[in-house]
Length: 112
Image 1 (cartoon, rainbow, N blue to C red):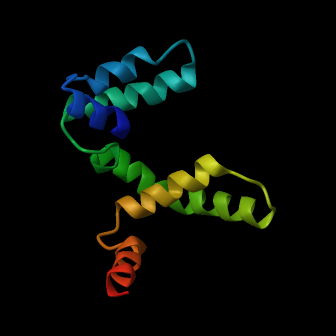
Image 2: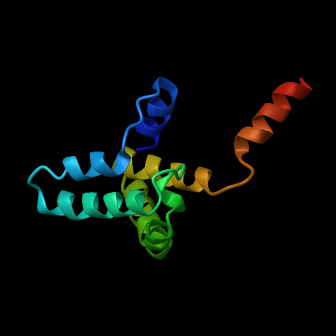
């Protein structure tokens, strides 16, 4: 959704992200429930930068993050590749931090 939002702003498409979520239901009951949550979040605030700042999404992620971390850790320990899960966890961790490792790397580059 963030990529769609960014492209919409750049190209002046004025995409309605909540409406896109509604359209994507596509017959899958699990997908439909999740799409409904996305649509409701964008109905509450169509202009927020990320679903992670929606209070209901943020609450759900925070309540489930320890289980998410256990699953990713367990898969790593077993040598099972889970690129989607581990990348999304890294994105979540990066998004909620004010200062990142990238700042340190850039500072080192600037120093040398």
